[in-house]
Image (tube, rainbow, N blue to C red; front, top):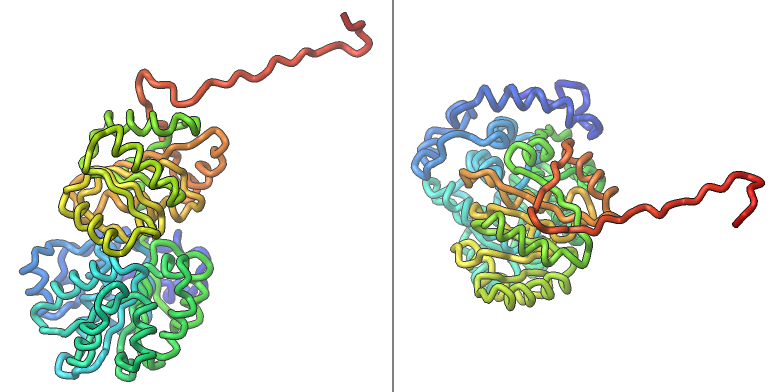
Length: 427
């Protein structure tokens, strides 16, 4: 069994649990090598074997035994580490398939991520014949209403559409047993807190709440403290995961030499698929326009919040199918990308916040990929402090990336100072 924070006397104190659990989780995940050790039922184990799951990932090994108890629990883990199965497998054990009412509600920050969770959850529940409803914007609401009327027992969607269905009284939560907040930090980042709180207030007080998040900033901690009852925490520390599965570098560059540097990095690395992150939508569009023209390729695309939903779907589909080699993205949209083929992340613009760095580089080095990912961050001379903050966040010093025969930044000589002795006559 895992060593829990409640056993350490810090059930409601979010400070300091990262270091306390680091050793405990190492021991736990090394000891568990099969799903049979997690306490799952025989039908669930047969489904897992059938779909090809062999060994539980660290977040699954640590999270599933706690979730099976019905207690509220928090898991810190990035997408791509198997967290959908970590919360869905124990949830399936507690749902009553004979009761055609909503018993499970899973909320995620984006339509893309909701659809990924929906597809994975249906695969995991194939033996139980559980009925699902996908509640997201940009899809016909009529089908979602029909699924709910048809006795859906599990609803997966975004807070905005969930609120809409609640207002229309097509979604009723009276018999809800479990609520899952997936990627809670990003949901709060993009303004879903009022919707989430309203939804949680509409849920029965006698329920299990599971919260999964890549990071634990104060707003997420406050949400957990307010709406969860003595939650048990599992910290699969993002810092350690990122270091273990992704090779990371930085390179110093002048702002006006970034595009030339990007061309050389791509030529040197020859990525299978790469995501280039920019801070702004305008920057993403400009970079896309120039590189499409210079590389004369139709395997380059840009994605950001202003792109129509239909176009965003087409881009993600092409990326997943391997039709795209290079995707230029902003943080908000890039966070929802969960594709195993991403071999490289290039931070063309260093992220404004350290947690965004963690989210960005987490797009590569996925659990579903057999290869180690690579992440390269462009840093101007003025951004040294931001690089230091990132290194503190992931608890490692990034090595410098080298590009032969290219001067990424101009060497600046310090001006010579003339020191004149006091009282000396000037010439």
